[in-house]
Length: 218
Image (cartoon, rainbow, N blue to C red; front, side):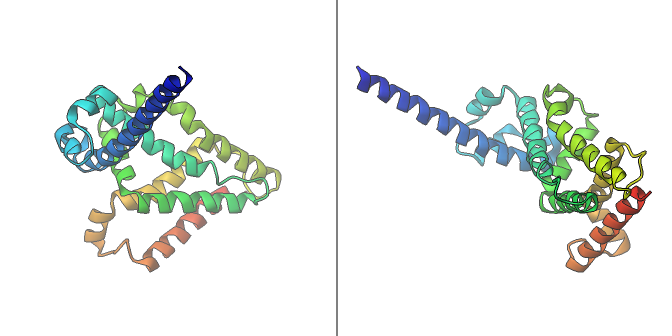
C-alpha cells in the first residue's frame, strides 16, 4: 500500500515538473512572439508550433491569448525586478548604489530587447492588461523602496538633495536607459549612430550616470 502511494506521488511530481517545464517553454516562445507582433498580431498557433506542446494545452495553462500575454508581462517584470532588488546595499555608498542600478537598467534593456518591446506594446494598450495583474504593484514596490532608501542615505550623508521623489528618480533612470533601446533603429538611422558600438555604449552609459548624479547633487 505504501509502495502504491509512493508511486502515485512520484507520478504527480513528475507531471507537475513537466507542466512547469512546458509553461516555461511556452512563456519563452510567447515572449518573442508578442514582442515581435504585439498582442493583436501574435498567433497562438505560431507559439504552439515552436514549443513542445499544443494549442489546446496553451489554452489549458493560460486560459486565452490575453491570459498568456499577461503571464508573459508578469514574467518579464519579475525578471528585471529580481535584478533590481540585488543592487542596494548598506555597505555601498549612495553614489555606488545609483551607478549599479543604472548599470543594470542600461544593460538589461540592451540585452533583453523583447522586454522593451513588450513595454511599448502594453503602453499602446494603455496598460489595460498589466492593470489586471493583481500583484504587479506589489512586485514593483521593492525597486521604489530601494531607491527611497538610497535617497535617504544620500541625503543624510550630504551627498544627495533632500527633495527627490523615488518614483520620479525611477522614471528618470528608466527614460534615459530605455529610450536608447526602444528608439535605437530610428534614432540610429537618422543620426548615423551605431548603438551596438561598445564605444557608443560606454559613452552613453557614462552620460546617464553623470546626468542622474548631477541631478541628485545638493
